[in-house]
Structure formats: C-alpha cells, structure tokens
Image 1 (tube, helix red, strand yellow):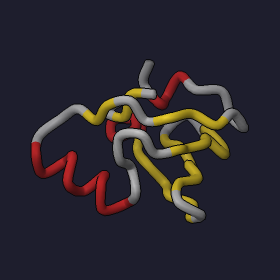
Image 2 (cartoon, one colour; image 1 turned 90 degrees about the horizontal axis):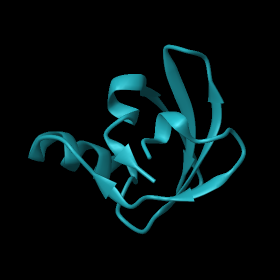
Image 3 (cartoon, one colour; image 1 turned 45 degrees about the horizontal axis):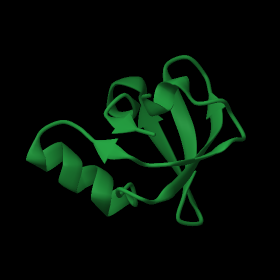
Image 4 (tube, helix red, strand yellow; image 1 turned 180 degrees about the vertical axis):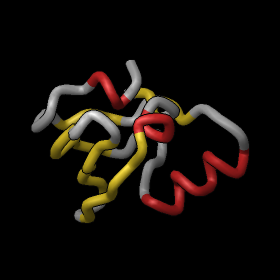
Amino acid sequence: MPLTQAVSGEKKIVRRITGSGEMRRHLANLGFVEGGEVMVISDNGSGLIVSVKDARVALSRSMATRILV
C-alpha cells in the first residue's frame, strides 16, 4: 500500500519506491530505501510528516504515494 494510507504512529517497512530514476534517487537521498523503517507522524491532507532514519521529513501526497510499504 502507498505510504499515504499508513496509519499515523505505526512503523512500516518500505517495500518499493516507484517513479522515475530521478525521483527514486531523491527519495533515497532523503532516507527512503527498500527495507528501511518509516513512520507517519502526521497527515494534514496536503502532505505528510514522516520519521525516517532519526529525521522528520515533509512529503507532498504525490511523492508519498510513490513509497510503497
């Protein structure tokens, strides 16, 4: 399922990253890699705040849909 459907506060494992090579590289640079652990902190409707590798990252919904957990 896409990260946008994850319940806030639940830890999830990244299964796959979709999108162009440039988009996948950008997400990898932010810490989103296959097998990595992520947790949605909050979802305000237009974007998500996500915890990844001891950092908080803000993602647009369109970017978050490319992260499958």
